[in-house]
Image (cartoon, rainbow, N blue to C red; front, top):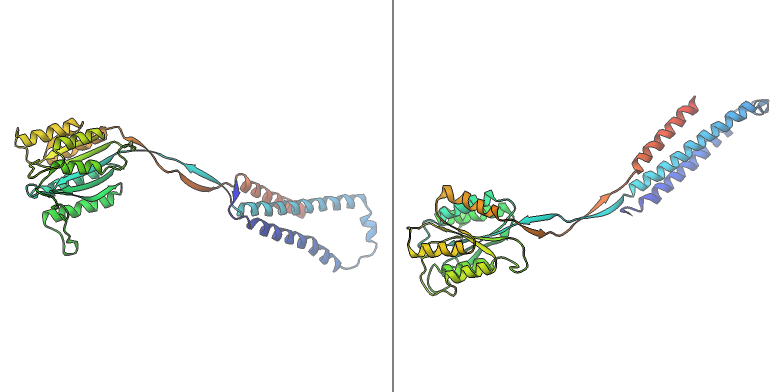
Length: 327
């Protein structure tokens, strides 16, 4: 136990001793100004008077001692006896990266998909969420964060941009950096980039998921094919949930996307706003959350113990003595 304000105690103690000295000196001064009375020695020699005077002095001395001790205890309380408490809370959370294809073939549905992303984010609790957009090259829209106000703001901003409803104060080139490569809609490279967005892939125990929205219509030479990117996800224990807004039933692009997503332990969905959101949320929540070792929270806590009760008892004792002496 430590005192946060140790300078308070000696100051209060000095004030207490000064008051005690005044309490002893003032009665003597008042007695010296009294009127002379003849033959007082006859009364003061009586045994009853001496007994009463002794009891009076004992009561006054007790009251003075109790008041002095009370002042010292109050000074100790004012010095703030404190202790340090370090609490480490257990946290079990997941990481989710939203991976959005912004190529020309997706431009008409990206705003709707961002609406799906917003609803998914609103139904999750405490997970870290980030987003990456890609076409010929990929760009991080925002990193993994648990700031849900920021996430909602960014998703809304991209939705307004992709739907062409940005206000004059919100204009920005939301596709900047996505056309740096050769080709378009390089889904394998986009998915691989999203896998690598998870921090501490080897050390982190957070379950990791990617919600990938693409039609898987590739135009150009990729560094990673989609199956290779899917294997990268498997190697790093990342589940892929794929949303295909152009599932024509049995076409090769849709089937490849389904195989890759399900091969990671994830799932495949056609874009059905009513069904896609709850199904993805249910699957993400069904994954056991990983234990996160959070930094300990160090707090300084006042620990006066029984000192306040002691002050109350001493005050009550002084009041009782004052009442008894007046009687």
